[in-house]
Figure 1 (spheres, one colour):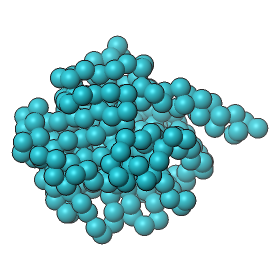
Figure 2 (cartoon, one colour; figure 1 turned 45 degrees about the vertical axis):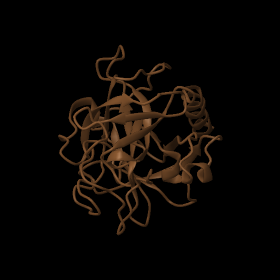
Figure 3 (tube, one colour; figure 1 turned 90 degrees about the vertical axis):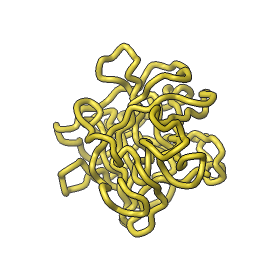
Length: 251
């Protein structure tokens, strides 16, 4: 059973190890592009800076009409989200029923992120293959039904499994392969980037967004499968929406 993995202030649906379980702290390029997306109720997701004032995240993280902020690790002050664009094909009902949907959103900030953030690039369109390694990085929790580790950036190298397509990619810990709980996304890692480390850029580029997770053997929780929304079909929308945001600001 898949679970919604945006962090909730008091209630957690998580299990065992995650990006933030036994995974190492995020470092280098994997750490410099990620930010926290928060709402007034303490819900937390992960996002990726694509420009100094533009953040990519999961659409389900910002589905409510609310006031959102972006925060940088170890900096208390948040930056207000000025505008939100969710992909027009995102369907919250389909998402809640564990159906593949365009779980992608862009956030335009009302002022630039600090220089400590180094924006990432979006990977060139391509289909991944079973056995490929992708790196995910996020701010999720480390323990089952706990806030432990929430807000600390961590990263993990996972492999593609199942039948990857244009609507969904599944990742698994190569050491446990969904038989026992291992590394993977967990509560707070929704919207986190999956970096294409096999691409031409040494620093990796974002090829997918973390959307859902399971515990081992497809049970509810974390540590089994990590589900991505690949950007293969949505790259042009991201580019066009970023241009539209910039155009509206310039006017």
